[in-house]
Amino acid sequence: MINSKIDSLQESYTLSKHARDLFINRNNRALLIYSQYAKQNAKPLYRLAYTYLDSTSNEIDKALNHLTKDEIIFFNDTLANVINQCRDEWIGDVNLYDIIEDEKKRKKCTLCKQKNKLIFHIKNQFNGMKMNVGSKCITAFHSLEYPSGLTKAEVMRRAHQQSRLQSLTLKFPGIEKIVSSWEFELEKYHILIPEFLESKYLDIGSKLKEIYNNYLKRRVGKADIKKISKILKSRDSFLSNMRDYEAENKQKDYVVTRKIVKWLQLKNDYETIKHLKKTGYVTSDVAHKILEPDFLESLIPKINKLFEKQGISVIAYEKEYVNYKIKPFSHLEFYLKVNSRILLKNFGPLLFRKAIPIAPSLQNIFKISYLYSENEQNMVLNELNRMDSVIGTELLDYGYAYDHFERNELDLFDKRIKRFIVVNLSKFLEEFKGVAFGLGKIASIEQYVDYLLKENTKTYTYLDLRGIRDRTDNYINNKEKNVM
Image (cartoon, rainbow, N blue to C red; front, side, top):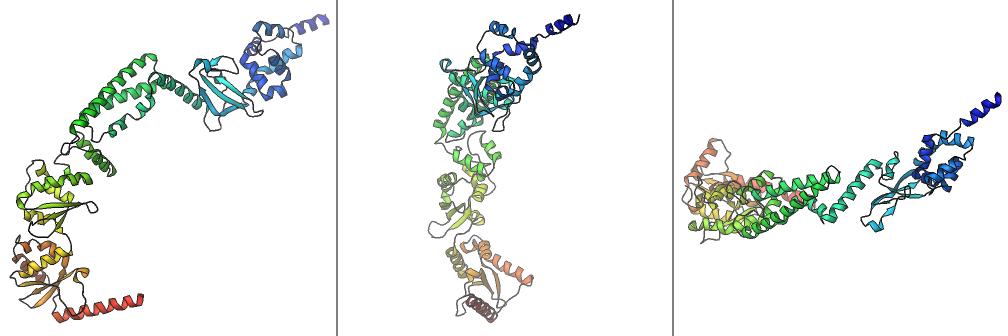
């Protein structure tokens, strides 16, 4: 009775189907012999896996039928855990993966021995062994980590995308660059591509990018390849049209150049760029917003034609100051300077045959301009002093150096009260420069002085000013000596 019970107990020790299926899988046998844990802590499993690595399932089943009771218990209780432990030894290699398009050169997966287009490289962190693992077999390594900090999911996603990209590139050489530089293609032209061409080109570019990205993410199939081919043909047509547009328009007046666009981009003026895209040409309502040097230079002949009847000419554009240098009198070496934006804002519409509320006259040019240099200031003073007026404009001489221009002071002598009023030299000359050339009445200066007197502006005698300025100069000279 006792013996029959023992026999029954021994007969109950059979290999579980789960353990058998795990060992029949070549991937697991290869993993057991290449991993350190099995070699050190599960030697029966290691030896059997090593012996029957490339055997058939029938050969392996025969071997499993000869397992002892202890070996069966070991298989049933530990095989799954040992396999998982072995997987945890492996980490991603620095060289993450290879994509091999040429079927003849494809590598075999170390685990399943199947050739793969996409091979992942992993390394055992304990014994330094390396394995080439196919895209299906790699999925079994759930906790795989990479030295770069990437997760297995990220590496696989990149690898699959790269693999699909390579396949796509074989069909459409340069497709990646075409997609990534679609918008930048517009910047290759020397002039701005207008909206009516740009918008359609960008639309098909968006469609291409969507199909391209979805293909890399495996959201679309090979049927969409035909759509890519069709879009690329449309691209060739658009590029041809844009080249033709450039050739036909690049020499025309007021066409928007690439330099203008870049200048506006540096100024973050995308609103003006948006306006210019409507036609591809500079228009009267935005001309004053475009201060790109080459554009302003190009306007000089057109501006001169505008003021030709008045004898006014722009002789230079001064890039450093964004000014136009103007010669208002053909017979006189006298110059004004005007901010180019101000000039275009006031008279720019005339360049585009648009009506404006002010005439392109000498008087209006004087109103928006400034005297060019100290030489012009002296010329204005000389002209004013030639005029018959109760107000004289003087730069008093005290027998010693006193630089009125450096101190920006002008002495107005009121003959009615025989006293001086000191005013800001540059402001006065800018205000009344037109008077010096008959563009205003001399009485306006007298009215200006009357206003100052009414406001109790301080007046001086010649001796008052001499004494004040003598002390000022002495103080400055002494201060300079102390510094030295």
